[in-house]
Image (cartoon, rainbow, N blue to C red; front, side, top):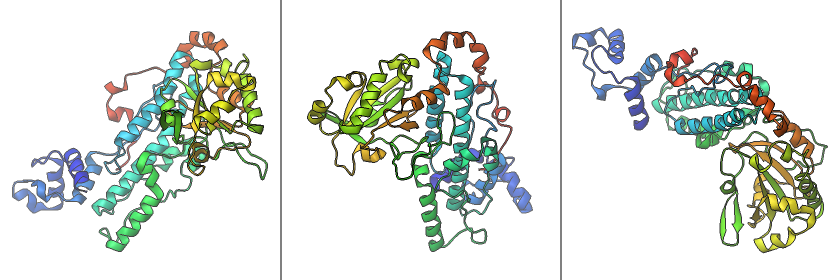
Length: 425
């Protein structure tokens, strides 16, 4: 609490002179204050004053659109210190946007399809950061000031986007009872229990699902009683289980998913036998086909294939031989899923051991689409929604001025100029 108030005091009420915002606020509420010279002692500043003046002098801002052609994408939202969202938000905003802009600048992706997903995904996260952080701040400060409701700023994104983002979490804003701004211990404990149950994962790492879009399609309907390839949904941060890298090293899946220039094609091969083997053979054959998604959209330059097989290295190395999956074996990095069944990578992802699974993971490590390894037309259709086939890239590059946004230098523009809409902390 002390750290939060110190930060807010240093930003919202840095001017403690007799003509500063704090002095003016006190003079407005207490005529006698002016008569003693308007001297402000730091030790007399209350949490309530911090919040009130923060609302007046440092209003939280959120852009109406984080991307709207022909302007370049921006990262424009300010929130309170509570929840320590600053670095997390900035890193994830950057990671979300960087790979999209990179592909578009290179002429590998359709800017008109891919770049709007930045706004589509990150604006709702910014909404929630401001709401959750503001709620937390008011509880810590014992304030009953109202909390801004930014849900109207997401209406244009559609209910299909808003609902998956908030799945399992109430959008009701939490705040201490207005009649009891300083709750007793039982009320405080109940508030914190409810607050962290709802927002715990969000506070830890902003692990909230993105809504449906061209890069996060909705899950397809499957026959009753059948299983999906994985239980992990589209548009969520990819799980990062521990795996065996080779006979001398263990690590995590992310160790082999470095870089922001490629999509990661994570293939779960179970024991490499039976129906899984046949599906893997179909995938392996497609890697040589010029009409396959792999060749059409850039091969190894665009895709990092990772094969996760169940077993220790010597077991998997014996099973992976064979002409039927030789192309897959040569193109993929093989990882060994040697942990106990209740904590291995297949269980972490909920992989189907009967069919196997192929998951396209975006460069920012959010899941895109998941299918069985033989359902390759679905992968092709998915990628065709926003990527440009290699054979067509030359024509798109020539039209670059009409497909790429103007990359304006937003850093030289005033914050208020970029952010016409404002919201309180």
